[in-house]
Length: 140
Image (cartoon, rainbow, N blue to C red):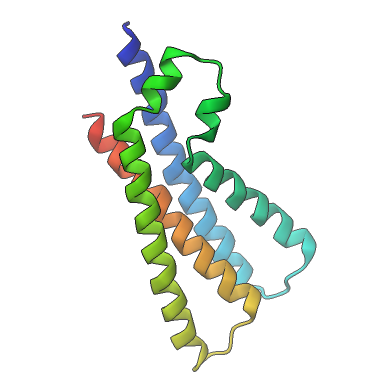
């Protein structure tokens, strides 16, 4: 198994994990908005999850990694381009979700925590799904 093949498998696993993380974020947000009791004990795990997901979308974990050449191949120019595209998708998803939640909140009042949670989740989900899709498409 050469070096490229060694980097290809973790890259595909990372993409699948990002899909699963996007679904988990969606379920956590739906459950939190459906049961509106916002407490610190419910917000802290969500903040940790979005923080780790956002961190994994950056190249920082690869800079800290000691895998050497495999790490460099997993963070090549194509992957950096996929990151830029996924950040753009996340930005536009946040703009659209903020506009949509503002429109919905005129008919059905939502709290500030719910609006923020929906907006952040929509943007992060879009970024995760976009990155995972681009990475899997590139590995074919």
